[in-house]
Length: 305
Image (cartoon, rainbow, N blue to C red; front, side):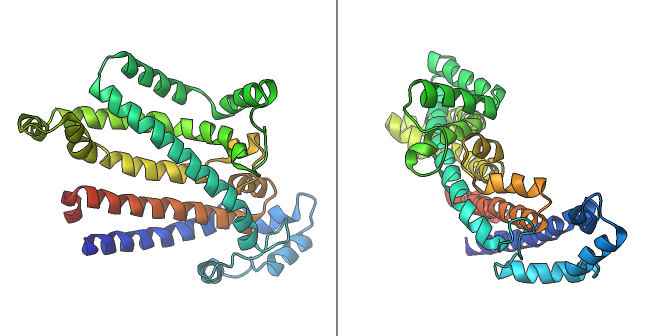
């Protein structure tokens, strides 16, 4: 198990370095950053002055080395727009996004996994068709439309929940439902498919023939193996929720890291954009690593891969 963890950790570090170089290079691939900062009406002398001021005139590898050395220490430079340290700016906003992401993935798992299990136990039943309906509706319904509907019904009409802000748990209920509902269809379908496949296996029939209770067969033998791909999917979905919550944060005025990413892109705030891309990518890498370790613990056969 230790060898497996070290192998996956080494691969994660390699991916992290690759992502860091790509995220740093993005601002050069989109054009001249000095010209973008100077504006359309700037003269050639103004652009050159900005290029020298921010160090864009130096070799790219030199700039990357300095940026990476600072990033490792948590120093991403200063925001061009907010005139604040990028690390502190992101730290303030990241708490909101992390809270929303944890709530959303928890909501998705608590609803999708039981529904997927029940749908697999009773295929073509009413509950199976209900799960299919939720799955199709979740994929077809735009997040912004669903969020606005919840605001109209529960905040304006019924006045049960606050429409915006992030001051209490109540403020996160509607954003959690919107963001979590988007992840539910894939988790539900994968759970159902995995359970159907496992329940038809020989070792399940053997367990039943030995007199094992149905609950023991379902949760100790079947669900333990069916949940393995769900763990990997949940890790990817969690990474997506943290990096792709811009729409939800905008609708409910949460002003987390996702909304900060939109603000930074719109205002050509390159240091903040670079740092956010790197941080969101690190979340994907870390969650995938955790999922690999959990899967290896659930299924010892994966440790030899």
